Image (cartoon, rainbow, N blue to C red; front, side):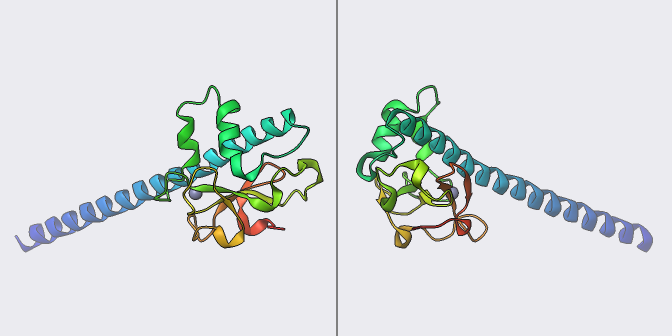
Length: 161
Ligand SMILES: [Zn+2]
């Protein structure tokens, strides 16, 4: 009898352990997918910025209107384009900002590691600013940013000036 109870207890313990492990794994997969969403958004924005520069003598958009410009002309064919401006780890509708120091700059003349778009809590449409306007780290102790090479990487790899 005691043996049966012991086996039952071990069974319940193992089942509980299994549930906890599964939940942790599901959480991990969910977290990974959320991170992927942010990178993916910035990658699509990077592509739109690249198309804009191709049409504008190689120059980046102006800081005051970067979002309006790329929304109006370079996000066609994308479902829910407004969602691209939101990071799931931000409580702001608009989660990214433009590096003011590259406003209207010739893309080809910038160091390829220069930051163009970064994660910010400024939260306004067409937000722009500098290093001090970066949000607290949202992903693994860091933020994503789009570089002048139009790649999306963790911003500690990139330069502000
Ligand atoms: Zn993000």
